[in-house]
Image (tube, rainbow, N blue to C red; front, side, top):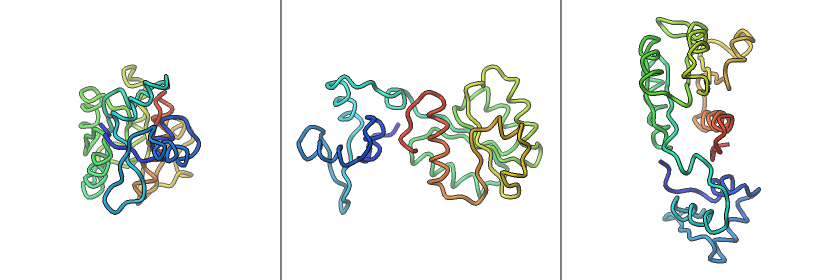
Length: 196
């Protein structure tokens, strides 16, 4: 679970438009914060942010009060999935990688992911097949799928399949872009994300 927040992240969680208003509260001593060595931006601990929300009767977003968001990466290329998984873990996500459709089916039940990053061209299963199986699984109706491919572009994917996804990424992509897509999907789950 994420323990430190930038002023921008805190602003999003508090429903404030800009980070400058958070910085003013820090300078005034209303929110305890610290600066990382050599850094200009402040960091606010999770506990200090929660305390500020409690004192000021600000509703606590689910992302602050609940366990980490679970992400299932479904990709048969380890050279792509491993660094992506490590990046997500560094950003406080709980991550599991499935290298094929069979493993993905197992992890859907055992791991119960909130977000699924799905390669559309797996070795043993097409992403469209996965979407069909996923669509009939009642337990997974709240999970959000973000499609990804190094071969297909968004316009190559059937509109019906796109409608079952909550975003699409063309490989290779910057991890910050992936975080934004995940953040939007989290928001659609009714949780506030710090990544959008």
